[in-house]
Image: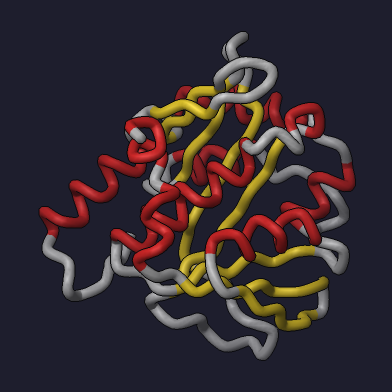
Length: 201
């Protein structure tokens, strides 16, 4: 992953290590454990997608409400800023990623200081604070790595994610052919969302 030029390699390694370190989110159904994904998580992540409704998949992927292929998911799990949340029974209930941003609505490349947020929470685990915690954690991790903005592509009614991003930082919306691209500015205030820091506080 490319990091901002002012960061040393040592800084970036430490920030990525912190981003992937296990931490927990308390919920009314028990604590979920969040950690960086591993290649061996593929089956659990595939099952997570299989237990999500078409509207939930549509909000995440926009492409007709279909889950990505196993090959695509496997590649995603190898990226450094991808975390999953696991319920007390060991099942994956959420997946969040911060990756190189795709082209904007004009077909132009996003700045090197921008990452694209992806967030998927299983239907029966929504409205429990898990998605909000994962998004805040990745926003803080991205800021530590020198990134200054998160973008997220949503369908036209992507209100839950908009509320989550509004809680992270100043967010604006730009229309695109499939819905909207949300843009959230990252500053030092987002660091309180870092998972291990939340756990210690």
